[in-house]
Length: 148
Image 1 (cartoon, rainbow, N blue to C red):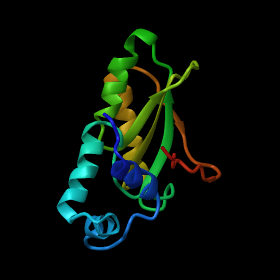
Image 2: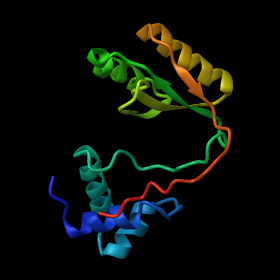
Image 3: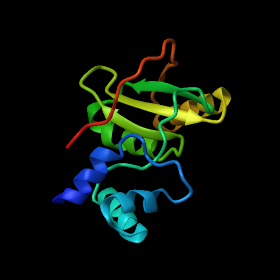
Image 4: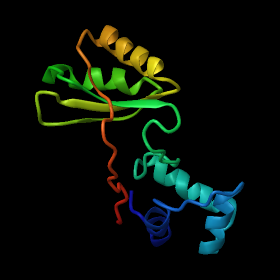
């Protein structure tokens, strides 16, 4: 998908400081001289084309519910299959492959620590593979905003 100047502005401007109002897309559209529906359509096109993954809040770990980082050592021939199983869990917001013995990493977020444990156990049962649970010990911030 080719990104036009308006879409580029939306991506660069609203990776942070998204308006916390009842009608945020109206506020954003006003800045661009667009209507609310047109602004929503621009964001929807970016999301449906895979340019952006989601629009939502980033909440510090364990501030609203519980979370953990997890990793698995997945045989290369099963990586796509296991990643699909992991991605199908609503509590998993993303997963990614790494070049390492532990080659599939993901974050699980749920209402309680017990719920997180249940998700990890379900992934173990469904895949037949061990899941390494890496709970947060010390928080640090990595800015995941990337200008385009």
